[in-house]
Image (cartoon, rainbow over all chains, first blue to last red; front, side, top):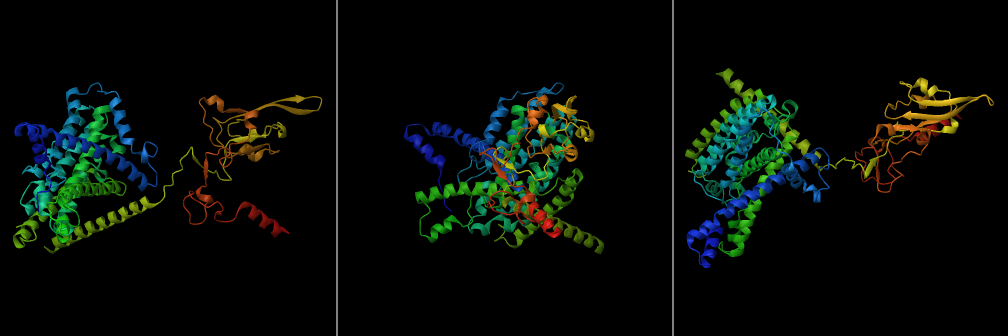
Amino acid sequence: MSAGIDLQASFIDLLRGFGLTPGVAKAVWLPLPMLIIVAAVTVLALVSTWLERKVSAAAQQRIGPEYMGPFGMLVPVADVAKLLFKEDIIPAKTDPLLFSLAPLLVFIPVFLSFLIVPFGQNLVITDLNIGIFLWISLSSIAPIGLLMAGYASNNKYSLLGGLRAAAQSISYEIPLALAVLAVVMMSNSLSTIDIVQQQSGYGILSWNVWRQPVGFIIFWIAALAECERMPFDLPEAEEELVAGYQTEYSAVKFMLFYAGSYANLVLSALLFAVLYLGGWESPVSVSWLASVLNVSETTAWLQVITGSLGIVMTLFKAYLLLFLAILLRWTVPRVRIDQLLDLGWKFLLPIALVNLLLTAGLKLAFPVAFGG
Amino acid sequence: MLKFLKQVGDYTKEAVQAAKYIGQGLSVTFDHMQRRPITVQYPYEKLIPSERFRGRIHFEFDKCISCEVCVRVCPINLPVVDWEFNKETKKKKLNHYSIDFGVCIFCGNCVEYCPTNCLSMTEEYELATYDRHELNYDNVALGRLPYSVTHSDPIVTPIREFAYLPKGVLSGHDLPANARRAGKLPEELLEEMQSAEK
């Protein structure tokens, strides 16, 4: 496996050609991927809101947004414009500091987690060696924000929603982490790049789904619960809690919650693709195809194709999962809070533990297949 | 130990069953996605009201004999019949007649009981106004021809309702023009009855 395109190195080389020192060139490079990722994530989150509307409409045999741009694609833009121009209301008798801080505490960790999401061999902001662990620890900041929002709103619905969100996030973090741990154990690394590389080689056959079918399901259920998606959307259950912890929020602060929740969904789908569906790898290994067709892996055009195919593959897998999440939303009814906690503690947790043990045993028994 | 194993077995069975049901549900939802939307895009598409639709009431001034039966059968005595007695002809002369559609419940009793059939139900249902007093129709407004989904506006595509579709068809969109609805038409039923009487 070759390194593929290294945008950073070529960019720095280019700037050095203009007479800049390597340090300055690197400083010029640094903000670029961050800005691109932040912009891309915003767009991805907006696209997922549009997808949610369209797929929901199709599932109910409706048309959905149609007149705002082609196929109603400008609806998310209109949403953002509307929320930006609305009056930012802080209701009386709230705790203004906590009330304003809470959306940020929910929003920032989600966007920060995209630090470790790889779209290709070198298409990642940083290849941290604690990558996936960073995501798990960052995602446990969100419940604090939700609790803050619920408490600061001075509203019984908000408080209930906040408490539920906290309980839910804390319960489902554990099976999620255990499922991830099994994958980490197989790839001997917490780095997302290494996890994908460990799944490369045999195309679709080498993906983690086949080696971790149980972890796959546990992760998906736990991720849905973390994102407060439909079967587990108790914190904002409309029929009971108005909008849960978001009840008192409007304008930009509401937008932060809303964007945060969709960005979180996109993030979970992306990481799901990275952990179990081979990240940027194609179902048919590109390097294998290249060797069959007798093309050297270092050929420029092949590298460009591989790079862009990687991005397309990652996004395709992520959006396929998003689509599944939306379908699930219109298929399964919401669970009760006791059923939710039962499912988390009495079902997912023991199974995740058994899965972890089994993975460890299999790793010792068959080091070839399970990453010795 | 055996009991514990049985419990585990039952639990697994239930979990598998739950997963199966969720799978079935997902396939139903997915199947719905491939069906054509049943949305009627209102201002541009309109459903053709059924034959028995009770819309705005039409009134023919000249047929009315001011008997006030409509007022008596009305649940809230709604129609306002303004008449005076003409001593020369010894007949009631109707001056004004009005029905307030903001209050009317469209039960159709007046239409049913009118001895001269001067009242009738139309298929007009777009009665929205900016002021509720505009809903108080006088005899001129009541005498206007009703809006027709099929004839009044070239921009409107009339869509057939469920009851008027051929057998097995679920959507009124993309129907061939000569598609016949399920069952017999009223005029055919009438014809049959008449030929049976002979």
